Length: 262
Image (cartoon, rainbow, N blue to C red; front, side, top):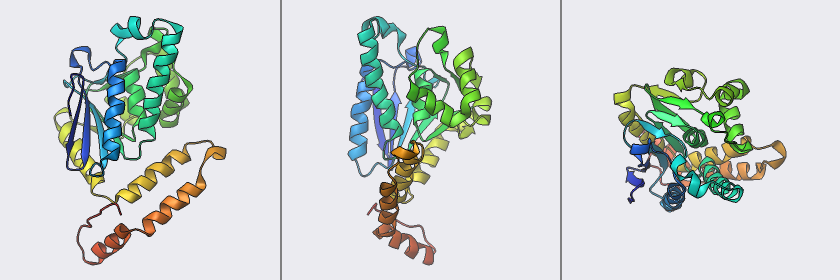
């Protein structure tokens, strides 16, 4: 599935979604966000897809943020700003709560909206050359509560405020050390590493992954908003499944299990 700015490729249980705007360091327009929503709808319904990888084209950027050249068209009035933030906010939330594991494959710049996108993913894996920043203070842009909270939850208030107040970039080692990324690999190894990492997840029990993902979403909610009954039901579904029987049988037979998500 391809259009001029967004590309979807599915291979061995993994959906690779590419932001394809390399001449602008994969800056994202509103049209690209909308296309991302359509792709997410497609891969969510595809039972063969068990992991999602978000990546940027060109080898220089993951996503460098919003396409500023489109601001006059999409974000020049108060009403347009509200509309833009509402539509993109829904997509950030969609990725954060997506029922399948999501991985941000970061190779180069991960700036502004790209950083917001990356912290919505479950896992962030980057190359050594990658750089990270939130340059809103250089553009007089405001970031909504949900975007700032995600950053606080991952790297803490101090480092988040460093990002926001200084608008400085940090390198891949700093990003790894502060917990922003979970894996840091050599530039030439990134693609193979992410492929192997993703396929490792895709071979695990999908009902367990689904339960862990949804329960993880509940954990990050305010205590009064958590659906604890849902968490119990998800755990019970794992133990009641055919996959649980397959996992026990494979263990006894000293072989790799073949999970069906049932």
